[in-house]
Amino acid sequence: MTLRYMIRHTTSPKTASLLLALMAFLIVPVLSHGAATKGLTARQILDRTATELGKSRNITAPFTLTSEGQTVAGTLKMSGDKFFLSLPKAKIWYDGRTQWSLDTSTKEVNISEPMPDELAQVNPMVIISALNKVSSPQLLKGNTGTYSLRLIPGASQHMAFSNAVIDVNQTTFLPTRIILTFGAGQTVTLKIGSIDRTTNHAASMFVFNKADYPGYALIDLR
Image (cartoon, rainbow, N blue to C red):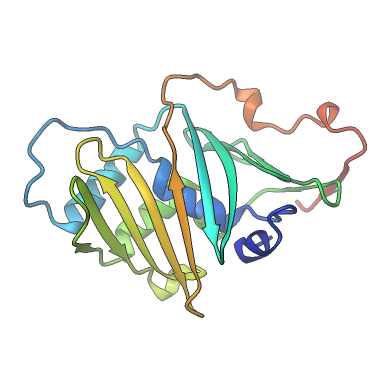
């Protein structure tokens, strides 16, 4: 279940881990502090983002993912470390312990309980914190009103991408775009739409309900 597979098969996206890793950078609800931000270093910007992670509230974030001339649209809903990801032909639920990954092309649902190292690829809390601790962020020249940061994951993080560039709105501190570069030079661009932080999500939002998907085979990998 990889991002590259999803890009090549946008009508049958067996995704999850890497896409959620990408989304992690974009849906962090970093609030404006109202203070002057002139002269902030890349580390200070990243630290501020990581600090605000603990204050995450309910989030609904539409997004588009583009690579090799193909674009796929989706929506991510989050509440703390729980999330629900909806793609054209895939859905992923995570309730903080159990993950259900549904693929409409195979009519299968994989059930798993991600280990800590796996969560570093799927859990927004984990990946941002991990990059904050290990990466050496670099402040690039961004467009007007935007901070642009380059993050290079450490080898011990085992990320599939070698370089990430994140654009952050200087007023709201909400990320607006991320560009990932893979080892082979392939780039993936993720853009986030208007983020809704007012709609509350019920706990049931993050749990797969078999009754809603008759005919799907459950594959328990726990």
